[in-house]
Image (cartoon, rainbow, N blue to C red):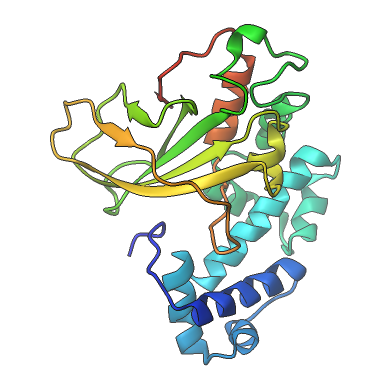
Length: 267
């Protein structure tokens, strides 16, 4: 099952998974075992593992690793702590292991991500701020900015790709050709007037909404059209956004002189 696909579960199961995720967040340094998390959810380890993956699209171990890396990203941007100190703060005893894992999940070494993320300092989504030119506004007040993730459903069908779009338009006519096949699309709607790092780095409530849909491409040389799905507030069971690519796209967009309207720009 692709990691980004969620299987609907009962409310009881979802609440149990949320309790386990809350335990993970309470102490990211703890060497949490599957049995510990299953006990929190009041399930057997086998049943808990199945329910957790069906609900989140990830195994408990991978979800915990993602939470640790999400915190590491915040510490890299918001603190002066060394990589070694951050590694220890998120539960790693080896800096080398932490750095390897960070690079695999985020796409950049820790210090390079720190440099990239700090390009967002002082910038607002769709607002006037240091380094932001008024010509770069998107749509009317309150429109904000869209960042889309295109993840192939089939393993090894191609890389995960990201792009930005004007939040003022409900339909995207994508100016590129995707390979044939199915794609899981996750959309992040970054709200107007929030600091640029609030959604992608700090995961602050209210700073963004999300939407999930699928896109099927049959003829790769035709420009696909994507209708934007309903948006909702994030849930604790949503996997964290770890890739450095949307951070780069956002930084480039906010520093640009005049971002193109209607466009979805792929990396």
